[in-house]
Image 1 (tube, rainbow over the protein chains, first blue to last red):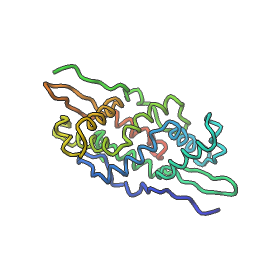
Image 2: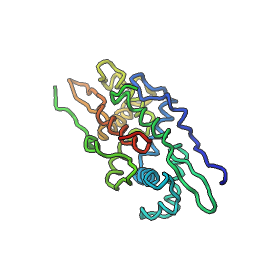
Image 3: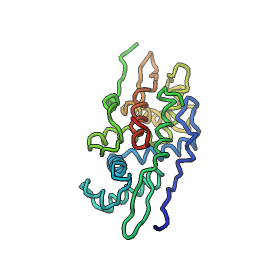
Image 4: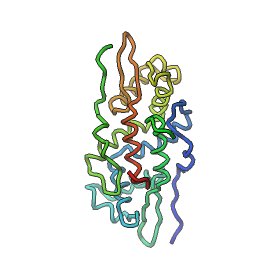
Amino acid sequence: MSKQQGPVVDLGDLCATRVTREPLTEEQADDLASAFKALGDPVRLRLLSLIASHADGEACVCDLTGAFELSAPTISHHLKVLRESGLVESERRGTWIYYRVRPEALRSLSESLMPVAGVPA
Amino acid sequence: MSKQQGPVVDLGDLCATRVTREPLTEEQADDLASAFKALGDPVRLRLLSLIASHADGEACVCDLTGAFELSAPTISHHLKVLRESGLVESERRGTWIYYRVRPEALRSLSESLMPVAGVPA
């Protein structure tokens, strides 16, 4: 196994960040917005659900490209956005890169909306 | 009270939509992505938390512009994006438009991420 490619933004830092009933600071809003922006694209959302629905929650680029009428470089670009936003992580094994969803990051995002949604944090 | 300005996208339709371990359809991904895209901007996230943090969960444009070094038309544009995405609703009373968060829409979005985040739906 080679070195794991980690996220550029670590959403772990956002664990305590909520779109709360207290106004967000500019910095909190910047961090959260960057993660929501990564989710704000249908191809990236479908990639995320495809990765999560794969056996062992892990998918190779070769498993993903067939589901889209898009070029491999376009798929790779979207995977890079997801990785840099901390929503997936990747690992190179042999000639392929394997992607896996980061559940803790998605949980942080989901929970960040709860106070505004009227759900106790 | 004048007629309420409703959302263009009704996120109520997304109640059953999850970024699940079953791959999303293109249509489901389009609807969800449009809402996440609306959240993918720090000004809009701060507007959302400012509105929710106001007394009665309701805020007038006049309450919001002071928090930003942005022009009133720019703030209005962001409020329009939030409204068209179904995340806030607005109501004109007299000369002012009042905004209110739509908790059910934010709850749908928050819940849409739970299966991928490893939280049972």
